[in-house]
Structures are given as C-alpha cells and as structure tokens.
Amino acid sequence: MSYSARDDRPADKADRYAEVEDEILAVLEGEPSRIARMATVAAMLADAFPQFFWTGFYIVDPDRPRELVVGPYQGTLGCLRIAFGRGVCGAVAAEGVTRIVEDVEAFPGHIACDSRSRSEVVVPVVDVTGTLFAVLDVDATEIAAFDAIDAEALERLMTRVFAA
Ligand code: SME
View 1: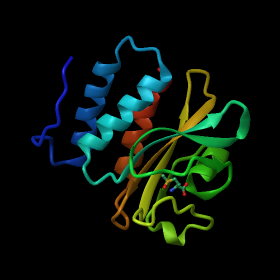
View 2: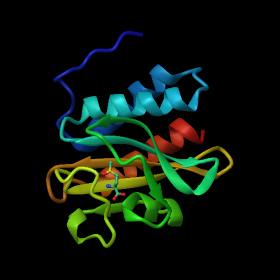
View 3: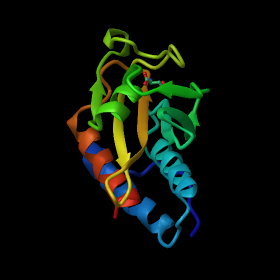
C-alpha cells in the first residue's frame, strides 16, 4: 500500500481520528512487530494532525521495569528515560490512566524535553493480556490543545492497534 500526505482530511477532529485509525489498521494488517506498529502509529498520527509537535512512545524498559525509555517518535529530540511517577508520562505509567494536561508548566514534576511543548495528552498502552508496556505521548505548542475527544480517540486507537 502506498501512502502520501494529504490536505483533504475531515475538519472535524473526531472524524479525522476515525479516518486515520482506519488507515493505520489497514497499513498494519498482518504486521506482528511491535516496533513497526509503534513507528507507524507515530508517523501517521503526526501526518494527520500537523498541530502535533511531538508524537510517540515511551516503552517500559524490560531491564528496568520502573523506568520508561524512549521509543519510536516524530518530533524534536525527546528525553531518553523517564522514571515511573516522574512528569506526565511517568504518572500515566505508574497509574495506568490517561492524562490531559492543559498547561505543562502547571503540572508538578513536568519534564521539559523541549520548552516549546505547552500541553499534552498521554495514554497508557497495554497488550492483549492487559499488561502496560508503553505510554503514547502527544504534545502541542498551544496551551490546552487536547480534550476528551483526543483522549477517547487515542485510547481506542491504542486498544485496536496493540490489544486486539
Ligand atoms: N512531556 C513529557 C516528557 C516527554 S516529552 O515532552 C517528549 C512528560 O512530562 O512526561
């Protein structure tokens, strides 16, 4: 399947998520590699939403189970490692619950990988057994760029790509 960037995507955010979800699932059909799946999700989400400044995964390090290590992403240089409980990603990894942060500077312990990131949504990523193996982190340069529509769409995408 060939794929190229497009400028005719739906203006409605939920519709845009539904469209890119279908495209991601079509591209990934039959692909078992988790790395390939994460890389494809990061690339296709970043392409579908130009306002996403950083889009990617932090993976639970199998050798250091209370630590996240950066995985496939699109965007500027990300921190390499984040301890469980630190920053937004670490909080989501520790608690297993999605966080929407309207202003990262108001989030206690926020990790500033790039000071241009101002708001973010972070979603836990689990496998078919329900075990957390990563978090999806999406950052924007705008304050309050994300809401419940983003959280629900990204949670659904993570379930369909990694836990179905
Ligand atoms: N914003 C994240 C750190 C990762 S990056 O911004 C790419 C956090 O506070 O968890």
